[in-house]
Image 1 (cartoon, helix red, strand yellow):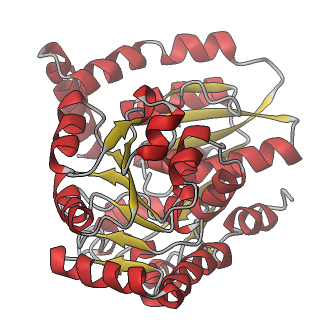
Image 2 (tube, helix red, strand yellow; image 1 turned 180 degrees about the vertical axis):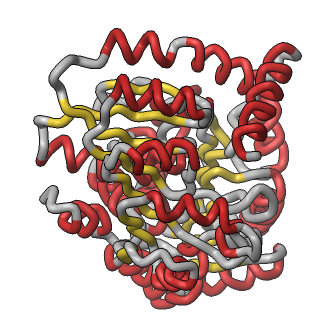
Length: 407
């Protein structure tokens, strides 16, 4: 049944590609070259570790492990695969991996062909990646296989009645390195005992990002001597809330890095903000110093921009789901976010420690921002809590590699 579903999925992707679906076209084109490229670029006699991530978010979780392994075991090379075109396109030039490609579709024939060519010494599947045929193939060949930074919930397929077949997939892992005790308990409830709680490697990633943050002269000139609020990955419903507040409370400077950087979105934000607003790529030093709002009209700067703020807002919580909270919290400042955050453990933990503030409407936001504006002690306490939460949860990469005797 599973193999039939995979072939139906492949047919669906091919059909979508024919009708011009961008991601489907990228995927089909990328899959054409997997095996020829592997055969050409794999070096005889070289030992490879295989890392697989679904998309960009999972890749960010895998990066600390890949990079630490490259430092401590340069004798191994890395093959990195992606399921999603968005992940592959974003990371295809990543320097710490020797070979980057799509994961072949999970058919038995593809599994045999891939493992025959790559012959990985170890395989690492990041977070939510559970491909039954690949996992069975790895187990059959006795290749050590690990789940990294995985997290499990009661409503997942593995824990539902009569799902014994898919549940067997979990037994194919040599070991599962999970984020929390609840995940370990759930796995043990279905007979999976080879589990260790190490935490989430994303904490290690954001700590490294903060340590390597770029110094941005324009942003520094804009922020100099002012109270700065940074809104990252914001959507329209997020912006409607904080723009209204800062239109009515002009004591703060505002940096906005919208989730979508299109002319329509940028113009919409500028039209809603009553103060002076300049775009990052178009502004001079004198213009940013005089402006009330700095609108980021390019990608790749947000993780460094957070360092210039006193308070952050991370978007997505009124729609698709909240974006990366840790990128902001690592700088020791309180983080606002919307109500769609239930699937994100860090949102709950940040709320619990006082470093994260969930809002459901404008009045929620205004009340909490008023408190930060009027009382430095309240602001500092919340910021310290956020920073301590991130710092206190780093180290998962080291725990994992020590458990594998790779450190």
